[in-house]
Amino acid sequence: FRGLEVVEQACASSILSMGESNENLAANTDTYSYRQPLGVCAGITPFNFPAMIPLWMFPLATALGNTYVMKPSEKDPSCSMRLAELAIEAGLP
Image 1 (cartoon, rainbow, N blue to C red):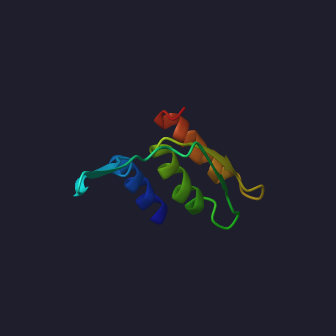
Image 2: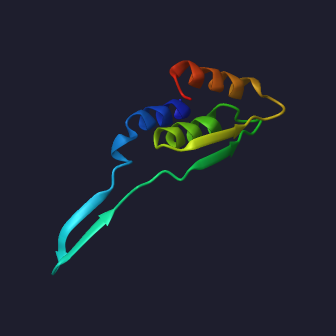
Image 3: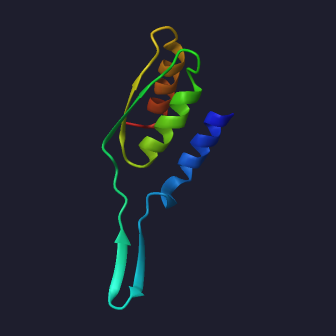
């Protein structure tokens, strides 16, 4: 269930990708912060947590505009392959 909680958070993460601004922080001083995607994120799936670890990493990475490269475990690649199939079915490029 923890992996699904991260997926739910990623679905509501549009507020996380916004920057912030503080005007008149001091005399004639304004501050702005911009959040930009990192680019490419990568994750290696362990054999003993084949679903939980990828679900902690790739929903937030892709929801915030990053490319995610996942290396499935060579001992148990079926769960990572199923997650990739679901991502394609959901419309991820």
